[in-house]
Structure formats: structure tokens, C-alpha cells
Length: 567
Image (tube, rainbow, N blue to C red):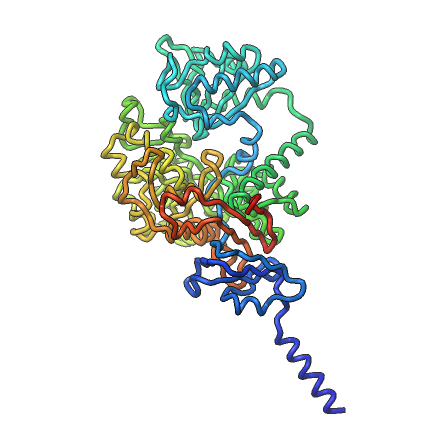
């Protein structure tokens, strides 16, 4: 009897020692882990939604069982799935349902798009589009003010429908006469705080609304008859679905959503509860008054909600606009608009008050700052708050974009522990016209200082600011590595970073910026099984081939969520 008991105990011990078979195994790959303990491997084993092991084909093959799904990588590159470090989730989804103006070569192309939409629209229905940029047209429209056309060109093709066309930067709006009338904008309308109604030589509005002036039209549109609650919910869900599908097709499994109201977060939570969030969201609270933030932040705080699908522990602020629309706040005037140093969208005392509310509730602050004056002012406020509350340094406060930074302010990012949340695609997209705004010397000295920030020891992250740019991480990876524009010129080559640094900025650094480096950002055992498989090795192919790489597979939590057709 004792012998039988002993044999049974031995059998149980052996069974316990045998690990459960993996649910998914990836073999025969070129695995780059972004984990210093084991930087490279051939294969990955996944159990549940976690990485079980990373190793050689021989090591990982042993973990396969009868029910294990096996994928042959055929030598392809497998990396941690990309983390979008700064984007706009609902805007990305909405952009799929409005006119896409980014491909337009001239203003005439856009007028033609609006004309086609107006022919098919009921009178009074608002025609919307986004993505135009006056610096990217092959020739300026005539007539124009600041290179932007006059609204009469749209009035001719859309007299009965208001038209609202968002600038590629999202920091300006161009509208037609019907939209101006809807908003009650005339030559007598004063500029709102933090915005400008651009006017022609005769003092008439041109249709170009800079920064907060956009709200005059957007508010008027919002006051039109509203859809039913059911229609609004369906539209919201469609936006989330479209944004998620686009992100997954580009290898993105986590998305830092740079601005969500409490109502939007409620919607995200509903979808998370239903298992219908397509990607993991790190949502930054925005569009709420200070009193609402103070009352609601503790209630809305979520970390890894719904098995890691939704986190809320950051607020988003904005102090200036964009360089392309002359809204970035600069220390010296624009070269091509000497009357302006940009716009302050939130006065600094009000900005500091909101930041202190966030600190009080233990929230991260993520602040949009593009101009060199804006970056300096934000660093000054952060420094004052850190001096009063040293523990706030642990909240990993961020500056979003950090596009133009004076040399003496670079070291402050490291000294204060401030994360530079940047976007590599902006480098190559903006480079052709940045010197026009700033001048060659100032552009060289202050613009997109990736190398300087990294050398100073600051944490630099990467993203796209989608839908300002395509959510495709490969374009931003390429921008950070090459800084090469479409015409072949390299913009401030001294600020290029290595491919390994660029990959880390898109994976582990973005995870760190969201307090999630223990959960994601590297292919390490125990972390979430979020994996991207690429068609080309972007760490090794000739530089000019990087943009042609595509995502073949996207795996989120151990489940294949995207497969590129034909791959």
C-alpha cells in the first residue's frame, strides 16, 4: 500500500513539474525582444494572454502540445507590438468617414472633392473633411492670405451646405460662407482668446480659423439638430471600431489616446466590459473643467481595467498650437509672419492650477507644447510643482510633441524626469517647410532634438499624432532614424537616432510613459503577449527599404487580431 501511495506521489510530482502546453508557438523567426536579458531569439511560446517563454526553436518546440497553434515565421522579424505614444483615437475613426484631403496636390483638388460631396448632400448638411496643408500643395491658391485660399472658392461649389475642413495639424479650420453664417462670424466678430479669425486686406473673414477660433464654427455645428442617443452610440462605436482596425493593421496593440472626456471614457468602459475594445487604451482625461477634474479624477482612475484593456491615470493639457498654422508659441517671431510669436491656448496660471489638481490626485500630466516658448514655460511650471511636491516626480509627467526646444532646456527634461513624447513622422513631414517658419539657423538649433534629448538621458517616446499622420509606426520609426524627406534631403542629420533606439522608443519607452513597463514593451516571459511580425527586418535592411516594410501579423494578448492578406 505504501508503495502505491509513493508511486502516486511521484506521478503527481512529475505531472506538476511538466508545464501546461503553450496555446500558441511562433517558430523559425528573427525575434528581437527589447529585453536586455535575452535580446535575440528564434521562437516564442504563449500561454493564455502572456508570454510563456522566449528561446531557440528547440527550446520552444518542447512547449507545444496537441492543441497548440503553431505559426512558422519563416525567418521574419518578430518584435513587441508597437505602442502608439500619442494619437487621437476617436478622431482617427472619424477621419475614415469624412473627406480625406491629405492626398490633394492643389487647392483645386480639394474644391473638386467638396463639389462632389455637395452634389450628393442634402441642403444644410455639413460637409466635413480633414488633412489639408497649405505648405504641401504644388502651388499656392489665388487669391490667398498666408497661403490659404478665400472662402469664395468653396461658396461657388457648396452654396447650400456648410463646409468645415480641418487642417492636417488639427489646429486650424477652413470654412465656407455658409459655415461662417451658421456661426455668426462677420468682420465685426472679435478674435476669441487663444485664436484668430484670419481676415483679408478689406477686413473680411477669409474662412481660415486658427486655433480656438475653430470653436465658433464647431459649436454652431454641435447646436444643429442632434442624432438620437442610439444613433450617437452607434457612431461612437463605429469610430472605435475603425480606429482599432487601422491600428491593428499597423501592428499597434496599445494606443495612448491624447484627450478623452469623462463621457468618452464611460463609452470606452462600456466597450471594455463587453470585450469590444479592439486595442488597449491609455486614455488621458481632457475637455473637463477644473472643478469636474477635482471631483471626478479619483472615480475615473483605472489601471489595467478589463484584463489590461483600459487605463486612465493621466490628464491632457495644451498650451499652444502648431507650427504649420502659426500657432506654436515661440520665443521670437515667425520668420514668415513677423507680427506673431504664436498663440497661447491656455494662460500659464490656469495651466498651473490644473496641473496642481492632477498632482493632488496622483495623476500624470501630459502637456501639448510645440514652440520653444511653450516648452520652456511648461518646464518652468513642472519645476515649481516638483519643488513644492517632490513626490510628483514619480508621476512621470510628459511634454507631448516637444518639437522645438532651446539647447539650454534639453537637459531639464532629464533633470526633472520629464518624458519627451515625440512623433518621428512629423520630422519628415514638416522638414520641408520648418525653415520657412523659423529660418535655417533656428530650425537647426531647436527642431526635433531627438539625439540631444536621448544623449541628455531623457526618456523619448514615439508615435504619430494620428490622424495628423498615418498611424503607421514604420513611418515614424523611419523618420526618427533617417530624418529624410521625400526629396531625399536629410533634416538636421545630427539629430538622427539608431534603429535600436527608435524601436525602444516605440515599445518599452512608451510602456514606461504609461507606467506599464512591467506588463508590455518587450518580449519577456510573464508580459502580455502583444507581438508584431513584419515583412522586412527594419533593424537590418538598407535604410531606403524601411518604409516598404509591412505588418504581416498582429497578436494581442496571444490572439491573432490581424493577418495581412497574402502574407
